[in-house]
Length: 322
Image 1 (cartoon, rainbow, N blue to C red):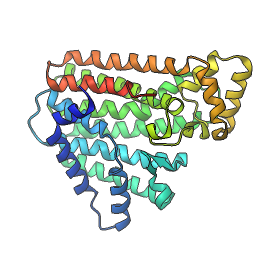
Image 2: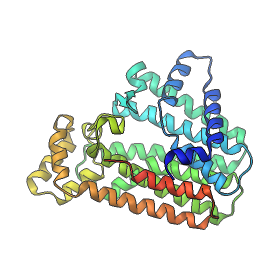
Image 3: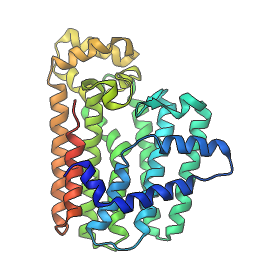
Image 4: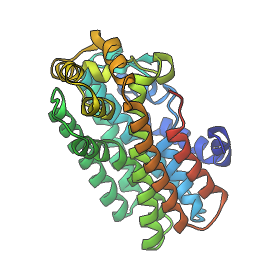
């Protein structure tokens, strides 16, 4: 099952989610409308909302609240993108100029704040304390992950354990929350809810690992951002951590220097160093292990086309071309 087939399975839900997103973006402040529509309409895959929708349908949900939850998750994700791009000084995302590059950093931060606050308004309207609990905890952990990543920047001694902790909080937490919400809205038993949460967590880990590998193993056009962005920011992601661990001393010192001082101008040199090791294949292997754990968690759910689609999303997360 490819991504188009998955979308077809929940096409009405996705359309309803997109419409709700547009409706809830509305503000009498013109700049909020402009920036919000720009970032939400920038061609994202809607992967996180898809997880919410599929998880709910996999447990037989027949109501409409999963649409609200899918939109809320997308708003939270979009807010983090706006803030990330300001913190990182990014100028391109999804092959377009970032919002902060177009309107400035202040607008990016403040519209991100608006999306966060709007998402919490929508949570209140759902009127489920468990939903509030899961999403408030998730947003807190995402913020912690951002700060942990900031602490790791320009630190060549960042190891794999520290890297995993960052991506668990920064990325996997929202995947986990979205999948768990699909169970909550169905009043699922604890076994099904925890299975969905585990699925989301491992899927998020796999997805971020592959994203980090793509920063060195793909083209700008393939990943929709500038190759070497992580390098310029001194982020020691898994490919760099692995390359340091298995390189000769001269290469290891070069990589340490690049992490400490930033090295967008040395991206070709770093890519050659990474390609001379197993760093990309190592990262991809660990991502596939995470995707496998995600699919294994789904075995606790009843068989259905929606469960199959969730498993296919795990495969999609790691099968993106380098």
